[in-house]
Length: 283
Image (cartoon, rainbow, N blue to C red; front, side, top):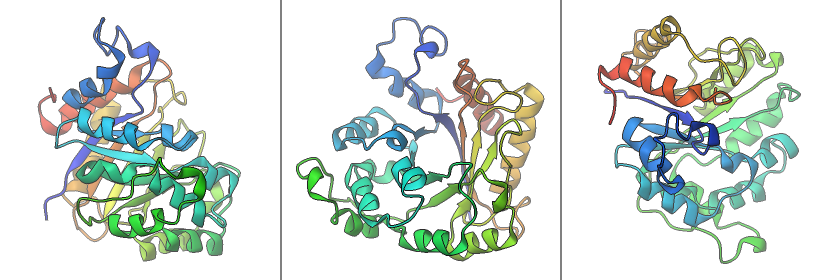
């Protein structure tokens, strides 16, 4: 089995990156194209705050190379407002809003829980059971969207592909063996999140892939990663992709996203980590 590591950033439209990571004079509509020249992935986080339009997903898809993969952050309406309960219509609206337009460039879906959300086994299991495991299943769910979205949906797929999910809890109550067991049963990955000790870091391997979010090791969303810290993350990632760091010895695909964007460190750290893993910088 050949496993791959993909490294990128959480979002890409940040004013502070212009004239720093992005060359001076680069027009905003070409910023994602520039990301695609220097990284192998990006996390779409605008979908967390509000449902995006299919035209946006199509534009993003067409802005990056074929090798590029997007992770998509599930809506906070599902995770923070509904708190994973009675989410059927909300899931339909989300999947109808355009992520399926990414086609072969659609990677895992991230579900980030608020710190106030405790581990509720029955609620979580019911939610995970409702998630589509293929793009074909996602399409069937999407067809159940409500009437508000008529005329602004994407209801087609070019192929029926596997669909991965990852969950990022932020409550210490998830430090429960039953939680990891539940994720293994549902084949959902447990996000490994570095949050400068603000929230717990969970690091069990529970699925066929590993999802990592690097929010800052010393200051949440702000601090950059030192060379030694990036070396350590590169070693861990290699151990997952070659299987030596996995409990069953089976290699895993790895998705890594830097979210330490407050001071513009995220894209620089992403490029530096990617070059450590590949031996060369993409571009």
